Length: 118
View (cartoon, rainbow, N blue to C red):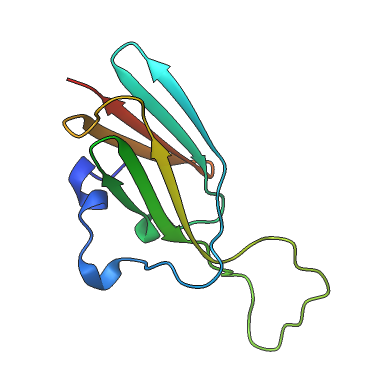
């Protein structure tokens, strides 16, 4: 079951992921709907508990970290192509979304954010 709208947006400062070093920039699709916007972000391998959503006047910021949870002590790698790092994705909208209601779901590696404008 998805977290409530504000639980994911208002994580305590201790749990916030702060960008540092090289950032991963996940792909996103943005759709206009009849009553707002839908944002789909490719976040395969990211734990939902590591996500932070921030709604601004005309933008949405998504932060988090994809960690390599498979790598164990004694393992060595031959090939590494998947990016494991902190990320931040900012999406700007052509109108104010500050008063929009925000709902989200995380399924099959995609974060789906629905913004309903009032």
